[in-house]
Image 1 (spheres, rainbow, N blue to C red):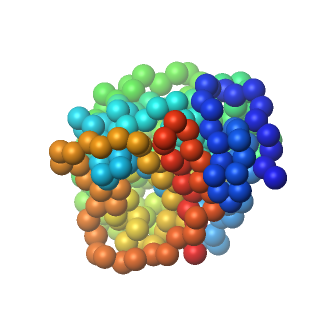
Image 2: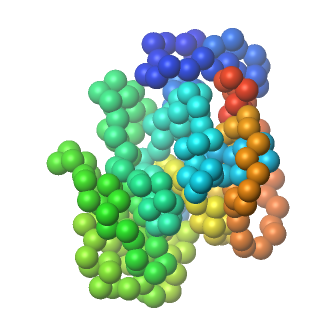
Length: 259
């Protein structure tokens, strides 16, 4: 049996449906305990996304309108399980990304599982044009680690030089997923969490590097025109195994690993 609920770091009543029913669980206990073994040449890669019942990944351009208390609890638990957060520059700008931060209690829990006090942030860009005004680059605290920007040889070097970040320039024209993950592994990453967007997810999928997919399904219909969770790239089905399913107020939270 998984551990029972403990004093939650946020308010949400989450129950487990699979692999067996549990009336109330703390997502943090579950996600921190999941096995994730790094590969010989790169870290374990998680992807975390949310979608509506009709497949929308955003409302008015951002994902926040799809989530509720359960999604926030699972999102924080998933982030607590990684060493680095990896995001495409367009999503970092659209979602106004900040440096990941943790409370003292969450920091202690992370350390119990061999994670650093808080995840660091890596932003991937093909062009080199990353919005310098996002909080992760313009409003860091003195305690925040320095974020990383990963680019290829085709990126605008002048634009990169103007960023308040460490720049990793890969040898390929565009940032190739395997090389980007290997570079983060060289900086101590054992587990990397990719948070999109959909086109970046398509690049990761095409490269065959997604080990774990955490999917939140919001109980709403959105309509309009929104990208799928994985957009672009060739059709290349990759079987995934459902290892857990949680529920909170009609929202579903599934964890899949590569079969």
